[in-house]
Length: 560
Image (cartoon, rainbow, N blue to C red; front, side):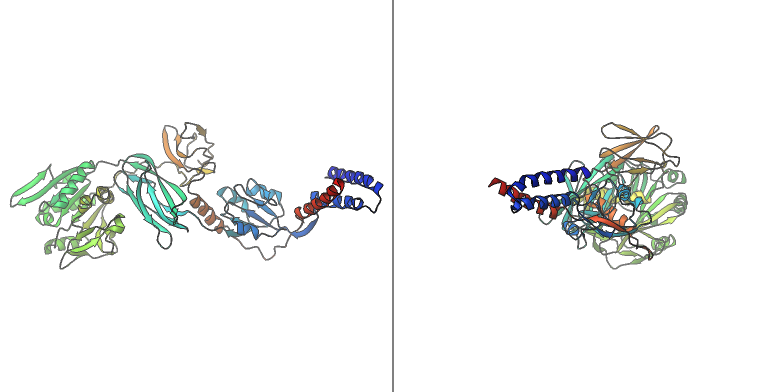
């Protein structure tokens, strides 16, 4: 700075020497030192004392209105990704900004909030958060795994001005669309049609049909186990016909028996309910008419198998016989007869695009504390419920015509309905070994923490690049993924899929994550906190503007 001032002084002396030949009355003689003074003040603006105990930190999402409201004479730092004014000190992270302003005891955060890398740097400092407005997809609830053929339900919330949300499958085709409710909520559904690591996508649009945000929905679809089911019906009916067809297509092993008349039965495979047969079965489906025909030893064997883990689904096909109702009541399902079958809809449960009417058996299931709802109609009526019995589960089902979904062209929703039902009721399977703890959300070039690792681990990116991980003594490691998509965590001979979002994916979700975390860090300053006075330079542009005017006058006079 001293060299700059020396250069300015030398130029001023030279200008005065040139102007003195015209006499001190010449305006150019006086304009020379004036220009020099304002140039010096532009290079070294004067300072004023201000409170330096609070550092204002700009984060991505800070609005123009928030920037305009900032006072001129306050310490100001801008984190990466922020459109900050020139007077802000650019910092690569909050820790670097605090090193530049070591006197700071309080923080004021403006924008979307602090990302995970900066939250620990806050320490015990007081913090005030002026959050920017929400935008895009701010909440997302989606499963991370699903069984093949089951229904996938995705819900969440979109901030204004969002109007609708569309769901696209891995091929890019739109599979569902929903208009947002009054609070921006949505609920979409589809069916898992292929095994492996797949990627759906949510797209949010405003009233002008402009894309305002998008978010990938990663999902791992597994084939599941081949279940063995025994089906006993009093007489053949349409619901059993379509159910057997679906079960065959789904790869289930089904033994079926239905009565035709006295002493005449329709049978496919051996549907006997013997202890040996039930020991190798996963689920038994039996309607009320077949239950009435069961022998005492069959009932005893069936209930004993349930105690050991077998699933049992009791279907009401019409008004219940008094003996059947009494038996089911002893199993924990108290029913009340109705005058006629009930008409109902399942649009909300199945996320139907068009209204579809169904029928329920003329009985109601009295709700109890130990019953878990399995299926409800849109009006809240209980259509199916289950309760634990030993190691197994028993359920009662009163929906008569689920096959109407197939007739309406909704075979996928029919498959999802029954796939979910069997998954909840069938004999419990042995759990797979627990894998490493992977982050629920990860973005490119953002720190992610992985735990439960062995001594050697690495991350394999989609392009085949391997990134070795430095595993700490607690089995955790930090990684900065460099490529979006399905990465693979390699731990010895095992590999685990890990999805990494692109930097511009789920922007609203990422901003809301930072917003919620920063709100938790808010802390009021202590009563004994004293202000710290520092010298803050005045803005340079007024001095520069005056200098430019003076120099322009000198130039104009020399030109004449």
